[in-house]
Amino acid sequence: MKRFILLLMLLLVNTVIVWAEDKVEVFPSVRYDQFTIYQNLAIFWMGIIGLIIIIKIKLKEIERIQKMGIDKEEKDVPLLD
Amino acid sequence: MPKRGSRLSCQRFKNWVEERYDIEAVKKLARHKLVPINQYEIWYYTGGIAMFLFILQFISGMVLSFYYVPHPEYAFKSIIEIVTKLNMGWFFRSVHHWGAQLAILVLFIHVFSTLLLKSYRKPRELLWITGFGLLKMSIFFGLSGYFLLWDERAFAAVRVATGGAGNLPIVGGLIKGFLRGGIDVTGDTLTRFYAFHVSILPVLTLLFVGIHLLLVQYHGMSIPLSAQNKTTKKVPFFPNVIYKDFIIWLVVLGIMVTLATFLPPEIGKKADPLAPAPENIKPEWYFLFLFQTLKLFPGEILGLNGETIAILLIACGILFFFLIPFFDRKSNRGEPSPVFTWIGIFYTVYFIVMTVIGFLT
Image (cartoon, rainbow over all chains, first blue to last red; front, side, top):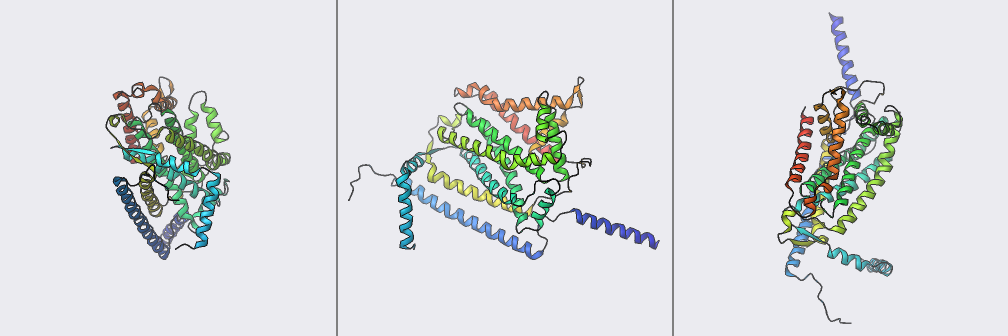
């Protein structure tokens, strides 16, 4: 019986090792690295949102100027020089 | 505040360029490019998103090509090394994978929206042809890139895909032999697919994108028939539309990076040309509708090979799809054509339903 249990244990361990060997880690497994990656992702999204806000403000300003009609060049403007 | 010296050198450089090239004419052209604003405006942005994703694919692909070894003995190992040993290697591979998925998805959306809004109608037939060519090239980009992984699933997928092409009568054998570089999928196929993926397809894509963009500039944005009679407001492309493009591109970039971080693509077992295909294999999602269609056909129809008949019918369906701008005469005359609207709906619904069924089963 003891031999059988030992054999079973060895088989299980072997299966786990083989399974672990087959699976390639496609993402860093160290907790510290994972934390850094998630932190950087959050900063990246903050950067994206910030840029979107800036572009939105700029776009609104352009549309406001276009509505006022002062973005077009006037014809026959006297030159000062 | 910029230094006086740097401001002067900037001005000198600007003068240097302006003395040689007519920049003012380009600026004037850009200012005069107008985009119509209507209820279908959202679909105008899909082309820009696809182009942005193509650029990202080129960049991430170039980075990966520094380390990838296109040889059957080392291909799989080189990818494992990229993912496990290189700094941020896993990230670049994941970004390249998700960029490809998103680019193909956006291209499908772009093609189906063009079909349903009938933007292919006269005089934009060439735009449809180049766009269709780009979609086909992107799918081949996906298949060839998937094979470069050289794992058992990619190997089986390429064997099935090239075998399917081989079922076409008359030209099938030629296409299969050309793609495989021999009778079966081997190391020669890997070399061939690598050549397609990093040199032939990028050059063809650049050419087609260039023609497509030139034609868009020449014809301007298409206004759907239903919105044509209404008074449409037009806004300048620079800066109004380009700023909106930037916003959408930033969101797409964020989504791509998030997907790449949370769902990096797995790597299976190394391909063994002598081993049987693994069980329950599925092609990539953009082949699922073809895979499901093939399943609908029995092995034999009236004494003929069922798969050959299925492939022939699918090829006819794709050919009809490609030639729609030339069949839809009513749309070309500017009249409503409900038959082609229903045909467009049928193609779109069929693609979505078959893909979902293929994904779930």
